[in-house]
Length: 600
Ligand code: M6R
View 1: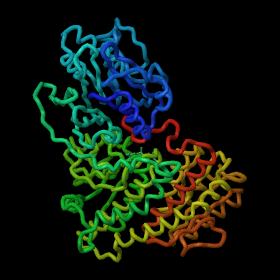
View 2: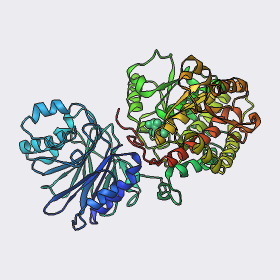
View 3: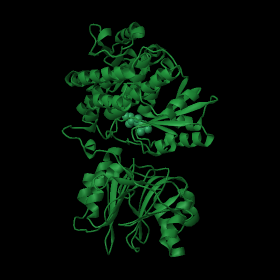
View 4: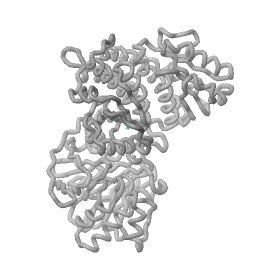
């Protein structure tokens, strides 16, 4: 979604900002812009489209050592050049970039700015116009900034330049993430540390209801009442090479291939010196204390949650519910007496989850976040965190984070079972090592999966995924993967549900991808396949070696039956990847989508 960068120092601001914006491209955006402040002017460059286009638009003769930049994912107003950020106040004195949504922008316009001629259709412009209005009233930029943010309802991360003031970037946030990065004789602002790893790995987290003044050699954090705040920086532990594609054509393919290593990393991180599970004692206690787990997640992470419920109930005998975050926010079910909330989120920034977490915290229930980004908002605001250790995931389509989520969930389930004294014939760390090997073998069979994508999906309009039990949940994920990157209308169904309606959609040549990895339902799912084939479907059965039957399109090495989702999904990820590739889709940056969804 939207991204913010800012720089104040002695070097060429525009280059640092453009490089920073390139690092944020993976988040998804539709327009971009930068503003750089030189002695005489604050120059604005904005385009609809990619950062490459912005680069061409930026005047290379402009020299400036202070600036702000933005990638926009439209919420209010068309994705066009006018609505792109930065926005300027009427006189051009104030220039601003904003992530988030100002919910009361119309009320603010009506009450304070009825005489102002607005240029854009955005909610954002109201903020910069308020700054100008209040500066006129007070002759004090900081006071104008404070007054402005006190009036805003909704979510925001802001960086503002004042052309008339000495070099300062004014910064504030509410709900949306924002960091200040520290350097020698320069400082930076970023909505994601990845954007500024090029210049620093030292970052200071900002909190809601703070105003922050960033100069080239100082960062001053104040609460809204003026009280000063000191906060230690943290080191962003991301290897800059992790966020490069290397020799891969796409991040998605690189991330699919990384899954065996992620399995090994998770084993290493969750194993103690006696080869037993190593888990935070507080998390163990929270699991022991609860009478029901409520998993809250969205998209792919929700699909991991569905598998997690199976693990927690079958292995640890903990009653578990899985909820789509955006539904739970508005329709909370009756809760048990001792609930434990488990938020599953790759990014740790998803706004739909955060609004549930705010409510859960208000009610005083314990919350555990499973995330790939330990310093993220959800992680900070939960009682406990379990790290996914998948490494930065850049492609919009989530792959390695999903398998990491399932791996950590199975470790949590087994640990809980053991803490309860349940006898288990299951060592998750050993089984995950087998999964890692199976994934590796699978990734070596790309040619075969590319052929399947071509044969079944090259020209189709739609596609169905079917399965039973765990396979049904993997089918949902396969369908999401395919639709988001190839734009094929794809749906996942429980095999037994087809004849209750969906089978009406099957016609000559309709691709149906069936997962047959569960022995106890193997013959039923194969019967469902026969039913669709009898109606003309082009069926593609995927099975593990021990359940293979002649005619199956693809088979993968055996893994523990409970862990087949971790292997079978890799086939679906690769099939989706090649389907998108052969349909000339932008694999890593699918249309309309954002990597981390920071608006509700
Ligand atoms: O960062 P999160 O795991 O909270 O994100 C949730 C979804 O937005 C995400 O999984 C989305 O569905 C992916 N694009 C799917 O590939």
